[in-house]
Image (tube, rainbow, N blue to C red; front, side):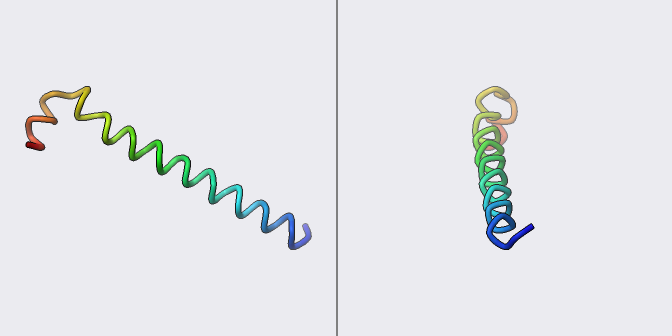
Length: 43
């Protein structure tokens, strides 16, 4: 594997991790709305 393709590979992994992180954050923000009991505890 040459240096360029290794770099591209690392960048793709970073993009995927960011995407997963964002979806995880959205799910966590979305969850209290789906779970009223938890939402009341957060208030």
